Amino acid sequence: MRFPYSVLVLVLVLGSRLPASAGEEPAKPPDPPAPAPAPDPAAEAALKYLEEAKNAWFSANRSGMKAFTADLKAEADDLDEAGEGRMKKLLTAETVYAWNEGGEEEIAPIQGKNMQGLHKVLLERIKGMWRGIAGEPFGAAPEGAAASLKAGEAETEVAYTRNGVKVKSLKFDPKTKLPRREESTEGARTIAVDFSFVKVGENQVVSTIRRTVDKENQIADQSSWVFENFREVNGRPLPTSILADRNGKPIRIRLTYTTINGSPAQVKEAGKADEKNLASILSKAFGGRDVLEKQAAIKAAKDVGTETAAGLLSKYIGDPDCGIEVAKALGSMGKKSAVPPLIAAMEASKKNAGLFEAVCAALGQIGDPRAVKPLANNIWSGVTSAGWGPIARARVGALGEIRDKTSVDELIDMLEGTRWGHQEGLRGDVFAALAKLTGQRFRGNYLEAKDWWKKNRETYKF
Figure 1: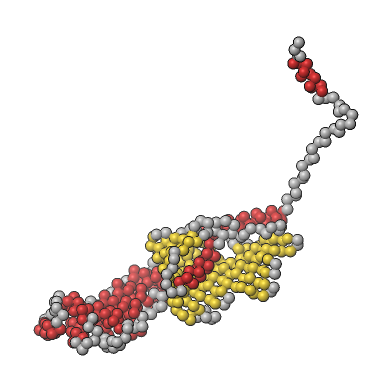
Figure 2 (figure 1 turned 120 degrees about the vertical axis):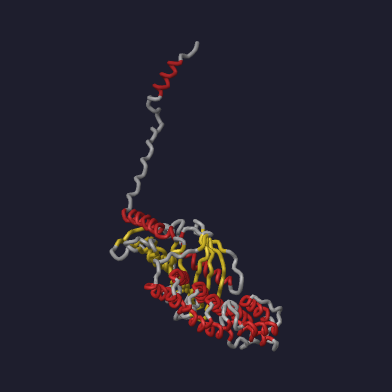
């Protein structure tokens, strides 16, 4: 006979309610969960403030410091302790910097003398500017340390303590919530990082980072990098120079941006220039070392384009950073007010072939006969020196652009000089200049050129 299923169920139910047999311990109820630790108001306030400060950092820096690629020219001046240049243009490099969103840098190889040193300096100094952009800008909390917040009118501090000893502190500007100083202790060493910010347009960007390592109350290592002369370049606030110092050995690195993300670098102009404010714009720009500001001022003078503007701009032909660009601008402006300063600059720039050539070219473009004699005078002086050739060719090229009879006179006289064996290679340049002015090709024959000019000088018209 089958056992009724309903009886089995009844037995099981009743059996579960029977008392335990003798010797068996009744089951203990599970332990209640441990109560959650009471929230630490001081730590919560500190963490909340750090989150707000991190957002302030991102907001201030993102527009200027997010990833981009820049082609730039870097020139470094080795400075003495007073900040004066000991060796100008010590290093020059054409390079490409690219920052990705992770804050990591990539740099194209640099070739040339001492380039690896410049590579290292630039990489170390510039990457401080991108510190913490993607990630935690103020570093991780020290292990086992408790955070607390101390707010004040002059400064706000987030401090971390472990066993009653402060191991890290972060000090902020109470208004902007941007960091001023970060200090941490590792055994006998104290590492301090100081920050300064500068307003560029609508952005607050890092301008100074100084790092000091103190060992047993003695400075073990000290370095700083100051980002100077910010300009808005293609909408980004970027520095045009960096003052870097490692243990009292300063170096200034001047940066000239060529492209930003593949587009030509454009500097935001302060406003439209005119004859009334141009002198002030030029004085302000050329009174500093901001190359981009100087370039913007040169463009402003070109845009004004008057004789007065050319005269004002010509005061800066000797500028060590942009003298060549000034000379080129004066040539393109074509104003006669620039001729006397350009003539004066010829003598001063003889040791700078690039500037000398730009000055001569500018005089040729303007085409004022007053420049003929200065261009031709003493052309054979220093003929045996290594740098004579480029200077002489620059003079001849300029004479070939000045459409005046005196230019032809001087070029004919130069041909007579080449018969003495002085730099025969210059003959081709002189004949080319004569052909440009007269339309005649003398087939390298000096006597033919001399005779033709003697017959046609009085009636010749340009």
